[in-house]
Image (cartoon, rainbow, N blue to C red; front, side, top):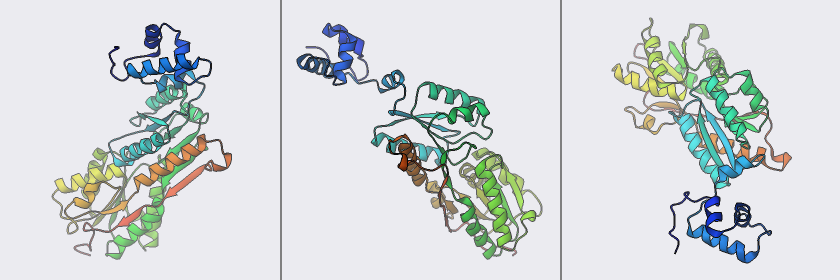
Length: 345
């Protein structure tokens, strides 16, 4: 009796050699081709099962002109829920429909991003979900124009549908909440204007300040790439300034994580020493002492929409394909214990 091999160790060449037939015959039998006699096809399939053969879907994809079996998921980071949670849920949803997702991480490096996009397109992936780097290269945009693309969180300037947070709407709520508590010295920590969402957020918070009767030009602002380390440094820059703000509004998931860490390290009592509004949906925001007032973003909804939109782009029904431009997910302000009236307000 032939010993069963571990899954993935046996290939078509092995099966063909063991059965004394050609690799083409094995491939046809495993793909249910009528070109192989039924009794031979059944013998090949039975032997493949006994040997633990698993089809190499990636090899099959590479041998085709385009395969719907694989799509790319290109993100700058995976160390925050904005990317890790969306990637995990997207992979689950796409896999349920028979499509596997190839994750690549650019580390926000435009040269690395270009190399990865070239590799993915050379591999003939069917399409991409991408959150572009801050300074995407023109060559990358040209590649994206050649395949179905759904943008995530950030827009690159290409003509494509995208899933984005409607941050401007919720910022009106957040600033209004702080102003209603009596805060006048509100500082803002956000992402760079070079990012599409960074520019929209800064515009939104300035508009919200004006709507609340506050001077947008008097607001202390610190913009930085969205990393926890930059969140920590942003806290120091804003809170060490004089006069110090009585409230801090952070818009960016990774920045918020670093902010929460640094506020604790500085020994600040929330909301007595500082009112704090953060952004994102880490579970521990609600478990902090006190729980943090949060602009909650539904990353599962971002993932669902991105997966559905890419699936529709790859489908055969042109009427089901999403229109280019932003498709917005509305965040929610969840007021908790980290915001209160200013001590000297």
